[in-house]
Image (cartoon, rainbow, N blue to C red; front, side, top):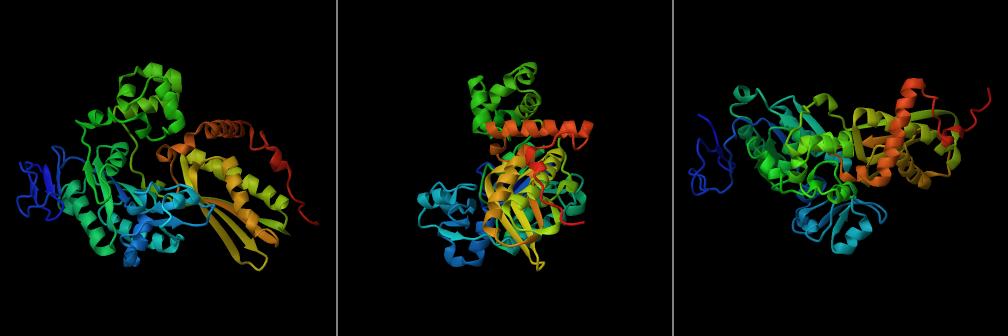
Length: 426
């Protein structure tokens, strides 16, 4: 029997959608209905306002209050709860703007140890269903449940509804899930009905669902690129779908090909557990202890180049940058910041790392490192990665990567890299 309807409360299943949109078993209106419900196997899971939800769960008195996770007047919002979002507060917003929009908000500094633990619990439940899980960050992942129907007792949709209920019951946290034929559509579906949502985008209706949406709904199309597309006559995803492929490629190069595929609801990327990576970093230990900003920055720059080059090769980016220092007494100091736009260039990494370094100056160090936490695929990164200035820098650094691959790492050397500290006596 084909399943086309499932009740999210009592788990009733049926071959036809009830006419009155109520579950015939329990009367709930929380039904998931779709003609392809039992054939779709790829999902995107997104924890709802994750950091803020963890804090609200642990502090029930905050349940109905606006909560912002972030820190410092010069910092940015890591997460805003749904109450705070009603005031216009959003992730990556500068803290001063967030507090101006919502002065009564309760601001809590991030507790990443706690968030990592809760993330581990949630994705532990997911991996009991399938090993094909690729996390994007602590709070979201793609899941491929193909071939698990017999093992887990039902189609992917039923497994995911059970999973959603289990997460809520056992962790006290809620998630939204999108089920679709591919990664792009699944991620879009998970954002359609938040919080506690479960949305389906099927093969038959995908192009029609996409068509009226603005071009900025596509991953990688931010305000700047969106303005370019609109000036070229492409206001909606449907406009891109109707465009000639050769014209899109002529205008936008490889990006034009991707726009064409996405506008036709095509995305061939697989769920790759080996890309399930929380972060990446580069560090170096000095021959002699270093104290001055000039010497420490001279060591930091090549690490930023190395890390950014690896990020580009792996096709990843991140909004979370971590600076690591080891003092002469071997105590490790780490400074972490979330930034508004995703990072994939050495120049951006270095600017952030230098700002994190400034408050720590005044004592000697024996090691410095720079890292990117919670990395995600660059094509799924927030749109700021493709702002005009970052695009120019990204093209320049990508060209340098190619020259170094062909002629050696010393083929192109930045002026900053020549300013290295003394190595000390022989």
